[in-house]
Structures are given as structure tokens and as C-alpha cells.
Image (tube, rainbow, N blue to C red):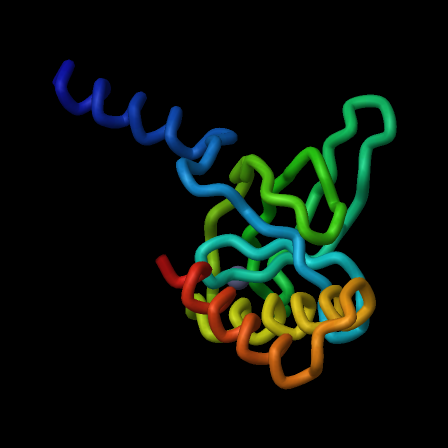
Length: 133
Ligand SMILES: [Zn+2]
């Protein structure tokens, strides 16, 4: 009986807020709003708490109950990822983050360097490679 209640206690502890071992990335959405990416899932901002600095996010898929929070919504930041609810109805999509980050890289690069477009695009391929591993 004790083992059962132990297991139950562990289960209820793990369903509380937990910090992921993996960092999240803030990337711009197609509508240029900050979007949180974590292991193939995408979150839109739901609200930010001015006093605590916590930013709450919800999964972009309708009906997905997953919600998380971070301490930043600045595009380009890598940040801690705190999980509130982990129920997803959708499948993770890793290829989307490569495309979003690649596009962001090309834009930033084009705006801040004199490199030729062809060189920037080849650098972007290298960035994709870095993101995979
Ligand atoms: Zn989801």
C-alpha cells in the first residue's frame, strides 16, 4: 500500500510545474509575433505578468491544453522552459523550427552585413545543421 501511495505522490509531484532539461527558443511567427518553440511544439503568448516577469504561453494548436511559462519573449533568446500543463493533442514538428530560424537568420544577416545573398543562404544551411545537433 505504501508503494502505491509513493508512486501516486511522485505522479502528482511530476504533474506540478516542472523545469524542462531542454531550453526553449523564441522565434518569430509568420505574423511576426514572438513564438516559443520547444522540442517541436509551438506556443503563442497568452499573458505576461509585469511584476514577476513571467510570460505565459499556450500551444498554438486549437484545443491543445498545453501551457508553459518563460522569463522572456525576446526573439532570438534561448530560455528556461517551465511546464504547467503538458497535454498536447498535436504531434511535434521539428522541421518547422528550422524553416522559421533559417528565415530569421537570413533576414538578420541581410540587414546587418554586406554579404551577397548567395553567401547568406549558404550560411543559413550551416545554421540549420547546428540546430539539428
Ligand atoms: Zn499542443
